[in-house]
Image (tube, rainbow, N blue to C red; front, side):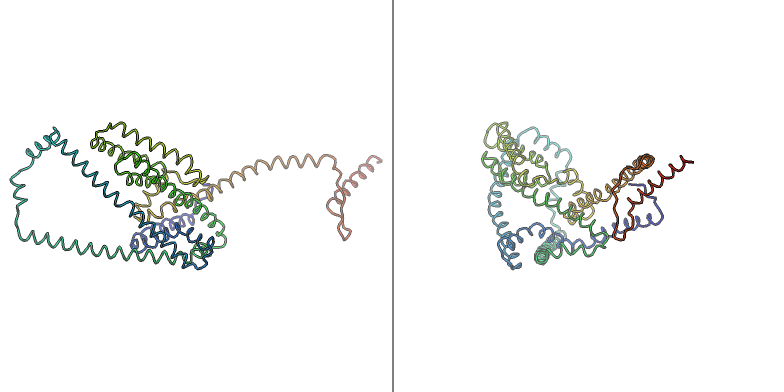
Length: 420
């Protein structure tokens, strides 16, 4: 792997590669506001292209524009229906959650903790200065506050307008990418030099295989897990059932991360026990049963049926890649983190390990060479084995005939030597 000599030329090439990577990261950060809609649109196009392909080739809707329009309308309708089903119950549950917290604070208002906090404020804060601060009627300060509020209102309005424009840009990018998805996904190979096309195509195949196993497979598993958790929490009448269930499903985008959803589950179990007077341990036990049942369904049915034998990235590698690329490139880094990580791992497997295999094969050949030469010399010293004779069309002798003639001449010379 490292048997090649590091020459000045290779050293300069390495420096140029590092400088090119640094320049690329700098340019992406500089143009992140412009590039972000494109990367989001490309990611969405990658996710929903199978649906467009289904409408065009399975349902024989040969008009690509019609297939794209139907797909986008179905996705928007699904999102609207999801929010229509989720938002009102979630708001009601958050109101209930707020009431539970208020009741909990009222019940503990006369506790020693509250009295200790009151004593702390009395000893460390000047009450007269605090009252003067609250009753300050300075006109200039009031004007400053009003101007700041007005400016914040204007900036928020501009932020909303920019967000709408960004959403429209994402839709435009998405439409045109889906319109020529095959050309874009297959035509890039022409930009690669011919000698490297096979290697580049193998790398992209590995990336596509890894992304299929993660984004499409794991996203579907996470969504179904969120639905199952929501149903389970609704059955046991758990607070914030739908919101908590979908939150745990979202955590499941990174395998085995749904365990962190147990922390808010314990807090909600405490609030429910305080609200209803039920036994806390029974409430927590019922929530644990939901976790166990959903995890069993996920491991026994969902993952084998959806993911199959696809091998995705290790959860630790996923978290590390999201952290590194997110810190380098911001939101764009979070979008392209997993494809880039898969590309680097594929490059390692196909390039560096290939060099190691070459070294191993070369060593094996070196070991086999002395044995083969010795066997050849021993065979040549023995009597020549009978070789079938063949001749070409011109009547010339083939190597097999020449071999036999040589053996006959050797025998005749030995006979003449005996006569002498």
